[in-house]
Image 1 (cartoon, rainbow, N blue to C red):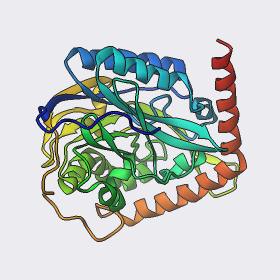
Image 2 (image 1 turned 180 degrees about the vertical axis):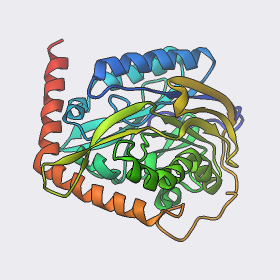
Image 3 (image 1 turned 30 degrees about the vertical axis):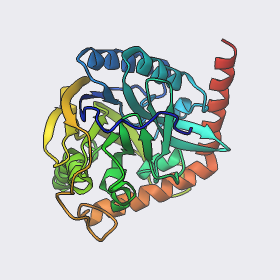
Length: 342
């Protein structure tokens, strides 16, 4: 949807109180998850936050689980209605992503909502690993002109790709982001668990530091909202095969607010459970602290993570083509019919 909000006037204050929520969501239970979001947004707004980040996949956590298809919504849906109500209720700006069906495809669509009801949308550029089973890639730049000035939105592994920085650099005053970052399995037996321990630690480090490293290359403050909790999923074994291995894991990283230099102003570790963080930020771009790397990924990814990424991407894409897209589109039609009957 196109912006109709005017840019911030040059003499307006460039400092504001920002907030982010940390969510423990259920699989496929849209109504329950929206109730939890509303409570947390009310809480962080009561503390004065006027810019609020809500996690990626706010309507459902996204394991490789058929129940997750139930969270695919039509463009006009109850989650977007809630975001509009919350923005108007608290006279704030907020953002969250959810699975959206449009034009025969499904997208991980981030909605940035302004107090007057204006919505700016960004479809995540590339699904991460088994996320490919549920949606396809987007093609926009995720940069909007808003009442706050330039706002960039990104989710999860978009924050560790140089192409995300390139499309935002010099164009935004703040980045509003969300994440759904899991780690290595904990149920594959002691030898495997021990073998993956160091990689799990590095993955946790990547998740915790991604917003700060992103900010240092952008020269703009970053809000990040995360999921939290443990969950079980399936790990697809090969493209086109119906079998998957049980995979018990947890979310890593933290919900946090960082300044344009990458200094953490407030954070809540995923191990702390659901909650909120609040900090004052200064809007506006500065010279980046760190030059952007001339490569695909911002951090150096170990070979195993590269292999994990490519293998699960291939498996997820095959599933999406054979079953995932149809299941998600069917769920969206059901939600549309249910909303229309009210």
